[in-house]
Amino acid sequence: MAGGIDYSDNEHQVFDRMQMLKAFDETKAGVKGLTDSGLLEIPEIFVRPPDELAAEESTYIKTQIQVPVIDLSEIENSDMRKKIVEEARIASETWGFFQVANHGIPQTVLDGMIDGIRDFNEQNIEEKKKYYSRDNARRVRFNSSYDLFTSATASWRDSLTISFSGPDPIDEDELPPSCRESSLEYSKHVEKFGNTLLGILSEAMGLKSDHLEKMECSKGHRLGAHYYPPCPKPELAIGTTKHSDPGFLTILLQTQINTCLQVLYQGQWVDIHPIPGALVINIGDLLQLVSNGRFRSSTHRAIASLTGPRISVVCFFSGPANGSTIYGPIKELLSEENPPKYRDVVLGEYVIKFLTTGLDNYRALDYYKV
Image 1 (cartoon, rainbow, N blue to C red):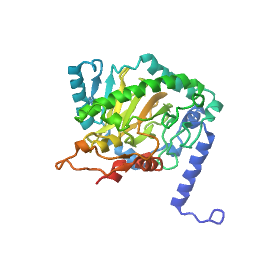
Image 2 (tube, one colour):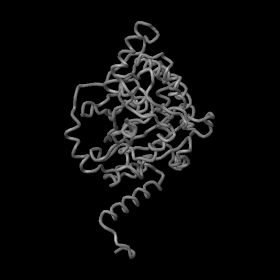
Image 3 (tube, one colour):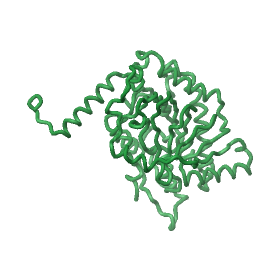
Image 4 (tube, one colour):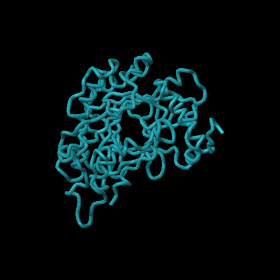
């Protein structure tokens, strides 16, 4: 008995976990706050379930296999463009991931973005706390694990989210001074590059190069800037749990310090080694849906590391923010031999399902299969 209430062991464990989660969240200091305190063990909320830890030996094998790398330096050359489109098609149909080199975004812009996120996370904690929020309506918010209260394991990372979606431009004063200029500059470049990629992927499906852009796949985008502090017990924790991305297309910028990003390929976790100056591209669930399963949205994760911090900046292209747009398999890709594999989705309902489900349990495409 506790206060006149009889808890079963399971109920008591759930209650204790919720109390720990709330206590951690209320510090508003994130995971970096824990590491700054000098802890040698990780709190229980960050320890993965026993069955997940046991599965590591069979699903992670060191391999020489690498995700495809595509050189975009001659994208304006018509003959080379055909080769690039073909490489993107094969990568999108098999891996759902590829890296791009010579993409045109200046190295100074990439470095500035990473430095800005480092400065934000390593500044005075009281300044960071001004941005701490779990209100998804806020266009700029800082927190640790957006799904902290719904996932099985808290992620070993802190995140600054900046949304450039919406009918009005973002108010620059909402952005933290430490990364204001760098975020605005990177956003401008990555938005343009996103449309370049969507043009390549449109052609890879045999469509006109502006097809996906006209579908408003790139209308509005969101930056997720993740700071992964060093972890004293990386084998027990997870940086970002396994998941697929819900949107159309993701562009990832990462530091070179550690190889932590992994993609699930043919039942095995494969490391995606950072390449200086390159960006990692992956297909999202919505692009798999509108391509009627032709392109693959692959499960991926970020492991924790004893060294760090690792910093990544992810740009999500997820369609218009109004939420009323309906997406389904592209009609030009359908035939008697290739009927629709997915139902149409209302974007707003789709997004709500994502935001209210723990990342480790989110399987969007399963809900919409015909």
